[in-house]
Amino acid sequence: MLRLFKQYYPIRNALFVVGEGLFIFFSVFIASWILIGNDFFFADQQLVLKILLITVVCQMCLYYNNLYDLKITDSYTELLIRLMQALGAAAILLSLIYLLFPGCIIYRNVFLLSVGFCMAFIVIWRVGYTHILNRGLFDQKIFLLGHGELAKNIVHEVIDKKDCGHQFAAIIVGDENRQERISNKIPEICLKAYQGLPDFSQKMDVKKIIVAIEERRNQFPARQLLDCRVNGIEVLEGTSFYEMLTGKLIVDKINPSWLIFSEGFRKSKSRRLFKRIVDLILALVLLVSLSPVLMLTALLIKLDSKGPILFSQERVGENRKPYPVHKFRSMVDDAEKESGPVWAQCDDPRVTRVGKFIRKWRIDEFPQIFNVIKGQMSFVGPRPERAFFVKDLEAVIPYFGERFSVKPGITGWAQVNYPYGDSIEDAKEKLNYDLFYIKNMSIFMDLMVIMRTVKTVIFGEGAR
Image 1: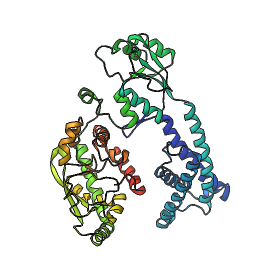
Image 2 (image 1 turned 90 degrees about the vertical axis):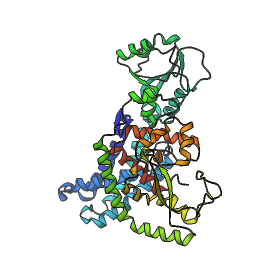
Image 3 (image 1 turned 180 degrees about the vertical axis):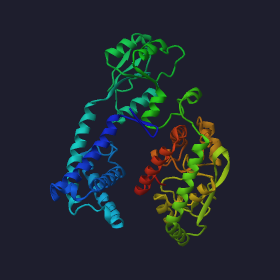
Image 4 (image 1 turned 45 degrees about the vertical axis):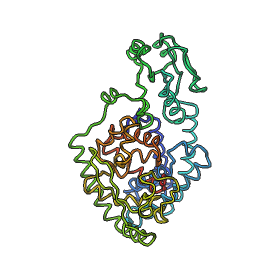
């Protein structure tokens, strides 16, 4: 497994992305050779750098068109449509780069021929990779111990995410007092008190055991698991495996001791200082570059409906310190006069015409740049919650108060992984992601969140 941005990915997945990059690179390389001849490499000493630029831009466009989400591109029709969209976007983006930096231009007609090669190579590459996934080639065989909700969640995620790199050899239970099968696709084997687990694991060529036993007082197989571990079989706690697999925790299933002894939650002064410097630099750059958008939005809001341009509302920040968060007003003035504090709903009638647009493209959040400059917020962190809801949420959601150990963010790990929520269950699911971020936060993870936020903004996903 490869650890990247605090998440684990099968090495096979990394090779898939790298391999696709090589196909794009050599598509341009071959097109240059065909159109220019044998001396093409010596005719331009910067050819490799120019091809690398095309490769990076193409793969970035593939990512932003969800071509690395295999659940979306599971049909060849969808794959071809998105592939043409991605390469078209790459052509436009490269044209802009060439306009600004003419020295980056590659030979005429090379890109057009490269597009044809790219489409052919990428489709062939992905068909082969899909064949590998469907047959489970190179998957690591695992045993799952347990039959409760945690075990069901793990089974659902592994089956749903076919490129996770794992395959169930069996679900092992310690007795026959269990309810219906978790999945008809996975064999369930009963080993009384888990006796014989080490030998059975070696017989089935299992290299990893996931322990999702929820009732451990009387039936935890410590001796058997120790023997497995000594024999070279990796043993992972269920919640840790779920965290690695999904990029989130399960607040209902973790206990304080797991949080205490697990890795993460590092908040050194140097990290905080570096994060603050990055926030300030990014805030000042965005404030200058987005100033035309800010002025135009303010004008449209004023023309569209009565009321102030900005909307300020008290939120709970780091260490539970209240502060006013600023947004462009997207609802009618005094929207909560009749109802009191409520979550926004789908197709909320209180949203104005301009409000619908700025919410879809997240423009209403731009004034929070001033909150970042003041030090009340960061660019990446848990979204700030209203004080009105905090008390109720803390009463029903375990560990909800841990969100206040870091600065709230304009965007966050929960926002790029989960759509807008308007219920306690949604708040709980977002906390699963927020705790993962707080536990594993780093500058590199912040960069990943910002990249995915740009993708969310471009496609206008998840707004209400």
